[in-house]
Image 1 (cartoon, rainbow, N blue to C red):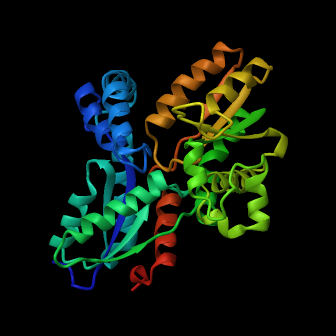
Image 2 (image 1 turned 135 degrees about the vertical axis):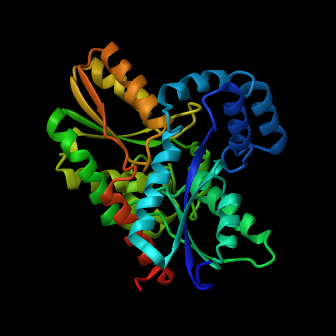
Image 3 (image 1 turned 30 degrees about the vertical axis):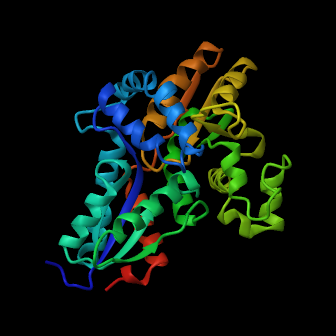
Length: 352
């Protein structure tokens, strides 16, 4: 057993079904969409929407999509996460115990905390693997970690790594991943695509009230007038990431477009990635690149939604080449960035 003062590092991502089959997808969607931070409706209405409209239809369709990205190693989100955890562990060595957990599905947060307990870990650094903060992903993951930790008689000490949307090491790792394809494709347009959120959730995070989404330039103004607001506003953090990454890659402003994918309704934040991709192809853009900068590991939303479906849409509307930049996955630069960001966030992981 490790020494009693050995810290743990818990890498948390969102989750994935156990298999690309309707039953497994249904279990996953039930857990995911039952979370009031994800489907933020009154409990009775959430139950009706989930059980009458989503679960009867969506699992079969989603299972077909998952089947397109599944490999012998299973879900990309899981095996890339496990590979990253292994690389981070190799860099931390005997200074910490590293585990991966998913907010929904497996390996679960409860299983990870049980494992840390068995290994004598009493101090736990929690690293949500979401560059930009959202209540639906970051907030829900932190909430579940605290809830699971509190079930133990001996509650571990917890330290949470904050969002890293503007961290130079994350930006540098992303730029390193994108640069080869940028040179190869020589795109006329680069889409910086982020996962969408309901407009209502953006407004809920507005500390000042009446500021977020009240004007077209609200996020740009926040960066100047109220930089503290960037700590809560997902959209503003996305725009900041896109600007820093585009600058690092040398993409001029006229060739950048920030958009939001995976929308569930018209009342999500705009512009929509699928709409913008079709529109750009129709107006004659032939070569484009997509950087899904909200995802640090490839998953359904990157490989299937962008790499397959959006690429088909692009060609169907007159475009020639639409390429997806791979996520960071377990790249060496990303593993080193994770270690550095975690160490900066907590002295518990300081080099020994």
